[in-house]
Amino acid sequence: MKDNGVLSFCHPTVTDTKSLADRIEDVLPQTQCTKCGYAGCRPYAEAIAAGEAEINQCPPGGAEGIVRLSAVTGRKVIPLNPVHGFERPRAVAFIDEALCIGCTLCIQACPVDAILGAAKQMHTIIPELCTGCDLCVTPCPVDCIVMYPVTETTGWDAWSQADADAARCRHDFRNARLKREREENDARLAAKAQAKMAAVERLSPENAAEEAEKERKRAIIAAAMERARLRAEAAKADKDQE
Image 1 (tube, rainbow, N blue to C red):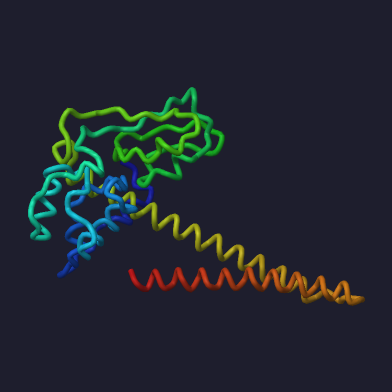
Image 2 (image 1 turned 90 degrees about the horizontal axis):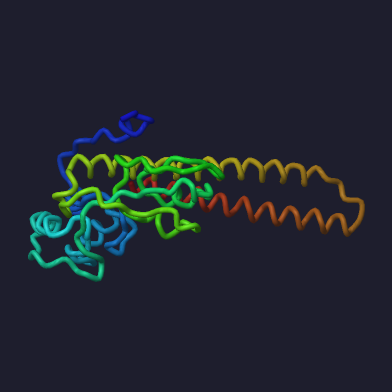
């Protein structure tokens, strides 16, 4: 597999102590499918650690996954909750390229960057990277994505720890990339707003109407700059908590 920055990003950092949420996350399958009712494996792990979720909400992990979570948390082994789905063979997404319109909605939905393509261009799945989360199916406006079972076994019998570790790396790398792109975009918008403000300040109104228009533009730009400042502060706070 080519690095593309993912492998270097995902070299594990050895720590002497791990939180309960960390240890729970370590035994989740990392499909990031959200079937547990949470936005991904990490939020689910944190919910279990906080006592807000049961250990039987992960269909991809199945019965073996519940046993693993029981060993970490000390909770009793219970059956998989059917509300969240059933233990099934591992599936891989397939795109009917003849129907694909290149809308990129599937790319945006994929939590592990397992889809190649660009706007208005044909998309395709990288099978060895697909976790079978099926999050790409619903957003597709032309129903060109289907899930094909690729194993006869289910749960952890159809998925390995190496698969989980690799999927986790790609998911974390993708999140970091998206966060960086948002921050870079915010910085560009802030610079553009500052340039516009400077241009407004250089105006020399000749009458009350022009003065009022200058003030209106100044207020709009100032509000935009304040929103950008608040987003930057929120991003910094999130980073400090990591």
